[in-house]
Length: 83
Image 1 (cartoon, rainbow, N blue to C red):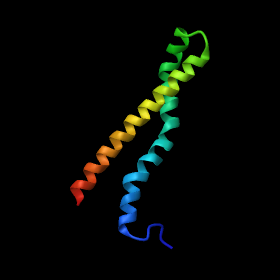
Image 2: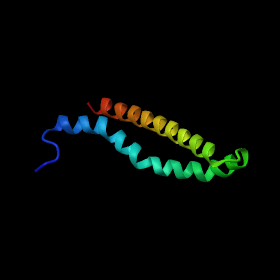
Image 3: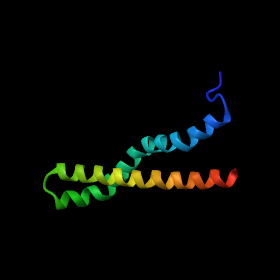
Image 4: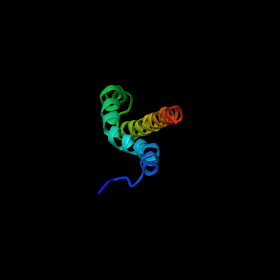
């Protein structure tokens, strides 16, 4: 049994589903990167840990949205050139 019954379904999944998988897979990596770089600096600025975690979570969300948009733009350019 094949995963995709036809070529159009496969292309539609690659255009729409792949960025979502990318976002889910890379979010913890981006989170750890931001925590290791900005966490100690922000901990000195704020006395409590809650504002640090909230601001780092928002920064992670913004970075992931930007990366997904970039990934979608690059993918649409690639698919437009190949057709």
